[in-house]
Amino acid sequence: MIELIRQVPDQIEGSFKLEIPAIEPKRGRIYICGMGGSAASGDIIKALAPETPIEVVRDYSLPAFLGPEDAVIAVSYSGNTEETLSAYSEAVKKGAAALVIASGGKLLEAAKRDGVPCIVIPGGLPPRCALGWLMSPLLLALARAGMIPSGLEEDLGSAPDFLRAQMLSLEGPDSPTLDLANKFYSRLPFIYASSRFYPVAFRWCAQINENAKSIAHPAALPEMDHNEVSGIVNPKAFVSEVWAVFLRFPEDYERTSARADITAELIRDSVMGITHLRPEGACTLHRVLWTLVFGDLVSYYLALAYKEDPFAIPRIDVLKERLGKL
Ligand code: F6R
Image 1 (spheres, rainbow, N blue to C red):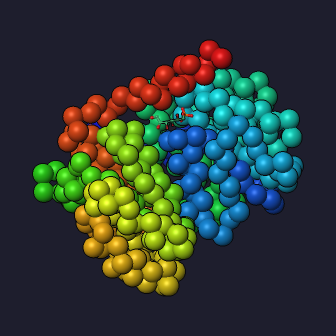
Image 2 (tube, protein in one colour):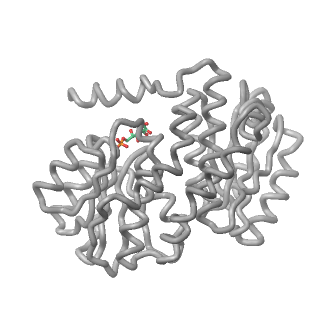
């Protein structure tokens, strides 16, 4: 799996060579439908373009108030995820579907049948290892349609070199990712971020779940200061095993950042340990990608520590198989 994490820069570079259909700019909201690793691509675009009304739909149904002035983008790496297929069908019925991103499967077949523009990405990877293939074409299509800031395309273009240079210090025996994985081992990873970057915390947890077969818990500031901060006390045997990570983006609202400092002080004596992680990178996109790759590597090293196969996701496979028979 580490080879696939190293391939993120190649995936981003490869996306610039894909055929990106011109999509009709819409005035309303952008609904990005997908699940798991595919939905993560939508989350990231939303975090990168906070001025754009983007909703990520992780469900069978689209919001009832969606209209023809809105855009719907269905993203499924396999093209066979039933929730995404259902949301896509609803979009077509409403006359709102704008774009499909998939490596194949029923979604691509349906898009071709319906005359919906699609971006065909290379297949054969676990979807969670295809983030570069999933998020880059989405970003390019939206930036070129003028629906998100065009500067993001430039930042994406410089991301592969930045990530390749960073990768050297991010992995290996003396790396901060291995160090954090060791801190998480046999403990409970809690990942905190500001609301804007909560999707990054969520993705960390999803990667820890799927790759390392470990539980992990994400939460967002400032909301957690109004509830969760009180709960980090009991059960004591559980809370004393928590290792909390605060993802500290320089973009965070000043008072949210102050909250992270105070919250960490308040919970310090209850939990096993705390790490404040400050992302590297000259722009938001680079910082987000750096943090995602950091989390991927932590989840990989944690899988090794638990002696788990990072590729195997038997419960997710069984769920899909059993639901497929219903
Ligand atoms: C598997 C993974 C999952 C899938 C999800 C949806 O590697 O990350 O979270 O992404 O089950 O499947 P796709 O992405 O094929 O629509």
